[in-house]
Image (cartoon, rainbow, N blue to C red; front, side, top):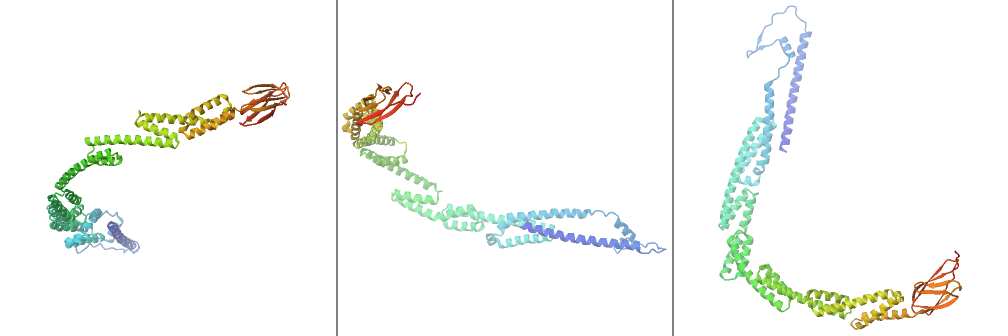
Length: 498
């Protein structure tokens, strides 16, 4: 912003100079044209008197018109001094701009702050006035004067801020000394003075916070001392914690607190181990585990911890085994032998050689196996049309009936399969009608032969009758015979010539 204003002033001054130069050049051109017109157009006298040399008051000769005209037509020499001055002005201008920018960034924010004015208002006004004067001279193009003013203002600002910082350091050191001596009144006064000089100081802010907490710290320390005299370790620990929370920089308090906590930890540890062992004896697993966890937070690697942990683990195994056996018994009572088998397996993983576990596991497995096999027969009863399958089903029913009193569900399945076996064992009369020439057979059963009317008996099931006759395509007839069918008649006449 300040540099923008300086550039604006510089451009305005430059425009004024250019206008002045242009006006001067125009006037010089008009004068030259006038002299040329006078020499060329004005009539010449026949007799001319010799020129009389004219002298100025300062002793320099006055040129004649011809000499002046000749000079105007000759090349004008470059004014080297003017060029050097212009370069010097530009360099000085840049120096002033740099000084103004540095001043604005490094010194002016601190100098213009209210706290500096409260500390040394006269110096503040003088330095800022010097900077303003330099700015005004810069605006008028007086760069050398502006540079001198800015040098002086910068030096004065640097000295003033150094003095301010020295006063701040003195006040901060005094505040710290008083704080370390537990002198709250002097510490508060000195830190207030320091913060008035440098409100932005993080060190001063931190020390001010410590000073503010000092009365509370001293009060807590006093209370802890009283509690120690009274042998009230809990109260002493509480007050020490409060003091260190306000100010951790008290190693003697921290050491005493560590001593109290160590003593309390030993006492609490012994009580927790003793309580845990008592809970194990009473088979109270959750309470024993809670005591173990608390004891481990105090001392994790002690021998008592390992002993208590082993006893808790053994109690846990015993209770888990008992729970699995109880669950297996409940599952048996509910005729849920799949669940009973699972619980027996889990109990066997805890106590593998227990005869009650092994016997219950084998019994549950046998019942579950019979139920699966009987369920498979019930799902596809037509397979009982095979005598072999029917014999297998009868054997399953016999095994199931041996232990059916232990499982009502198994007994019901065995009864249903037995009835299916009996139903599929009852043969059904099938009457076959044909032309007496066609040879008839039942696939998987045997030959019926050529007949016009014949009755055979078949077990319930699905059959394929085939009739063959020379010169005709064979004829296939599928017949389903459900259990309980009273009688059935089929006709087989091949009637599609080859």
